[in-house]
Length: 163
Image (tube, rainbow, N blue to C red; front, top):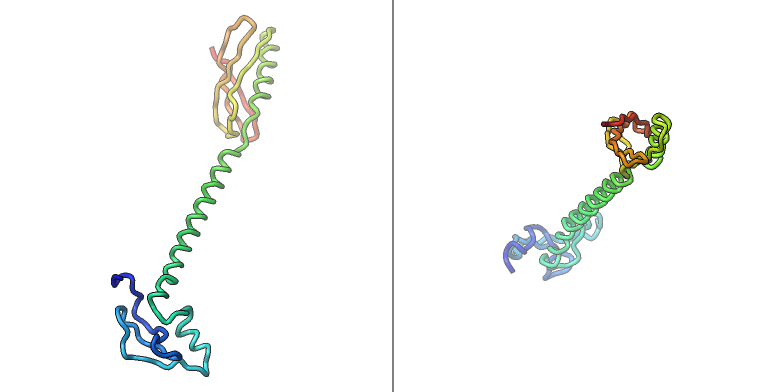
């Protein structure tokens, strides 16, 4: 065992006699001992709050658990945060482009007195000021671009028929 694996210097339960504390130098036991007061259990629990073994090397692994628990907890929180952020991004409200394509087609058909169908991309997030393109086609196969601009986050749009 290397020195790096030994516990810090301090008072530990004496491995040679029960009811006493012995000074651990960080590398070996010293001759210095203290009697553990039996009349004041609160003092005893304050002197050695979490030690169960008289061998400080056994107590070393107990002290290493807390950093591991903290790291694992932090990682879990980071993962949960990432899942929440991705979920929010994928569940963002989208514009109903099928209904929009139907509406634009109906309006263009009425304006030009011919049947016009419109196709718009799917999954367009609601975002005021965002633009995207749809394609308008008539019965002769002529296609024109329709530039659509969202005027609000509620699905309101304006559109312009391109050349």
